[in-house]
Image (cartoon, rainbow, N blue to C red; front, side, top):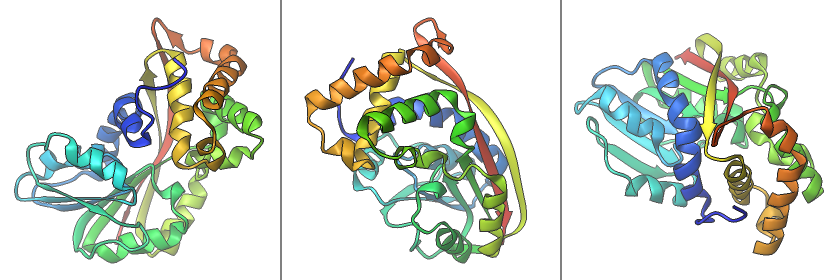
Length: 269
C-alpha cells in the first residue's frame, strides 16, 4: 500500500491511529483523571474525540463534556461519529491558548501539550477555566529515543525530505518529566504527580503503518504537503526500505506491535 484510501489526515487519524494507539491509552489516562458522576469536563486538543466519547459515560447524563480542537476537519469527523451514552458532548473549534470559560471540574489533554505554540500559556488557560478544587490530567510521549520504531521512521523521513528530525518528531518533544513538572508548576498548579507509563500499541501490516504515519505528516510538514502523489509514494517505499530491519523486530503475524511510553500528569488548582 503506497497511498491510503483517504488522504484526509483526520480520517486517517480516526480510522488507523485511534484504534491502534489512542483507544488503548484513553482508559489509562481516564483512570488517572478519575472523572466523577456529574462533573463538567473539557477535552483540550480533542482530535476526533476519543477521550471525550469515553469520559461521557463516566460523568453520566448529569455531567457535561466539551471537546475543543483547532482543526475543523478533526471536529467534522468527531461530530459524524455516533454519540456515546451519558453526558452530551459539545464540539467547539478553538485554540488551547484561549479556552472557553468554565468552570470545569476536570480538564484532560491526551498528547496535545507538546504541539501547542506556548505550552505554559496553554496550561495557564487550563488552570483559569478550572473550578476551585479542579484538576488537569494530561499525557505526553516520552522522548523519541525511547521509541525505536518511530525513531527509525522519523529519521528516515527527515533524511529523505532533507529537513530536521525535530520538524517531524514534535510528538516526542516533551519527553522530559522534569520539564513537564516545571511547566505545570509555573502555570500555578499544585500537588503535581507525574507517572511514567508504558503500553503496547498494535497496527495492521507494517506497510500500512509506514504509509499512514507518513501521510499523517501532511497536516504539519510543509515539505510533505508540497509533494505530488508519485513523490509521496516513492517516499513511502524509500522509508519502508530504510527501516525494514527495525520493523521486523516487532512483527507479530499480520500486525506490528511495539511498546510506547508516556508520562501522565495530574495536577490540581
